[in-house]
Length: 398
Image 1 (cartoon, rainbow, N blue to C red):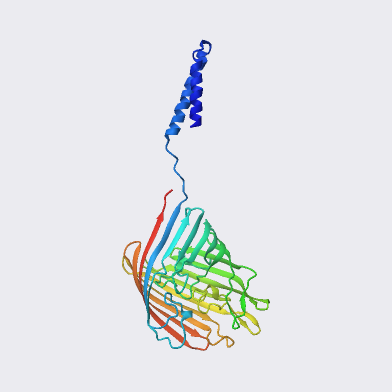
Image 2: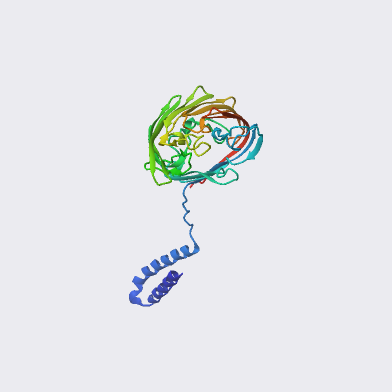
């Protein structure tokens, strides 16, 4: 407002000068110029259309999922089928649970075609209650990604369809912090080592002195894709007396998918390694989650593991899909290991899903889990599961 008042006074002074004949010719141009300034300032005060506020591209995504699960025997965990957690002995216990822990919420800041950040969480943060668990929190630009999320060994395009939120026991599924780069075919990554060691004395903690290094190759094919990933790692422990022990480890994963016609899709994965158990879905942080290595009397040794699964997805009708998967993990047999340590686990599902709308689906699934221990004992669990899922995606268009 002070600028306007000042301009008015200047204009008044100019008008007064008109009365002086000697300056009449010069002041007429000044008056017109000052009047233009006054009109311009009045327009600003009255308010011109404000510039639109430019916001970053923002997307909110996720799903609301409800599962009804019935177990004819004690499965160890109610909401997830993890064969390594199945208890041995008398497990003739029936159980029913209705839960929504597989509901998820995520936010993406930035356009997917450019630099963006993703944060996503579900409700599996606690076994006994509903608490948030971070699924992803990373920055991505082109083929470069840094942050917390799925290991680069994971082949998401070959992940079988299951209603069980955990998925196949032998799938490669670890979540951890890493930095990775994906080219047209080649991919490389360095990730948190996160050793998981079985110590019978329970007097040690995991130790690491170098990251896991992952390299691999992915090839698109006219009928699907094939992928090979390899990891070089080192597992380690720090004993109660402060001493550290390390063992060399590593493994490889061969996976892929084949489109066997317009309605049938086949998926497979085969993997093997030493000190490699951490990367298996059934062994990373659950049940016998310390099977990367074992602290024997004479020191730390990496344990050998092998695994794999076969899956199929059949689009039986426009909105109906039938899916099945069978998987197995084997850990080396060693007389020095405890009798109750895991030797083998198996997993299988048969699922029927109805896609009511692009966002809403219903499903039913029968599943099976089995666990053998080193002593030869076996525990098996059948399960029936019903599922309701609503998916959503909302994003601004700025």
